Image 1: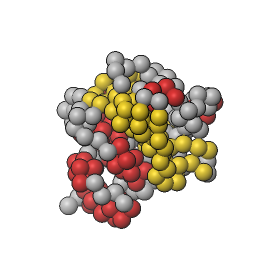
Image 2: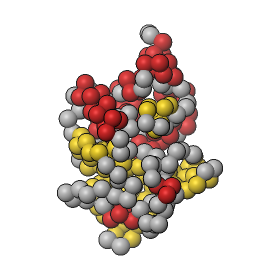
Image 3: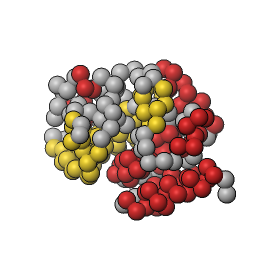
Image 4: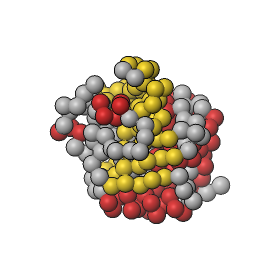
Length: 218
């Protein structure tokens, strides 16, 4: 077993499983996708450590535990369509695409989107639609989706995202102001009703532009 594969295994068994990541499909996906493939070579030895990692453009890959618990909270099926805001390195995109039917992934920086596209093509994940632009307050889609995931924090959740999910759909986001941020799951229970559940406390960098535009709250 190589040092990298040993670190990958330790991430699963020593970081994730002891911290309530137990969904079999999620764990299988985390075992299948190599996090080290989505960071710069000089950071590969830290890829499975319990820490956020720089990915360029002043953006960060969240820690393995944050991402695993967010992925589990989405409760994805292989028929779900997902909107991901913040493609970043493409690692979380790969996890989503391995579990869902279709992923719409939006990234502000062209360079990050292009890099993620190249990495994901190597994995032959063909169910991803990449876009580049500012999606801090929603993103136009052909139809509602089953799930929305924001891969960085926001002070409040834009109502535009809540309108984009089907009844029964859910949104996962890290919400609030440091150091008092929370991972929240918002479920649409009817055309005009949403239910918010706080899953755990955490801290993450803001989605680009979100800290400047908190006015669209629901």
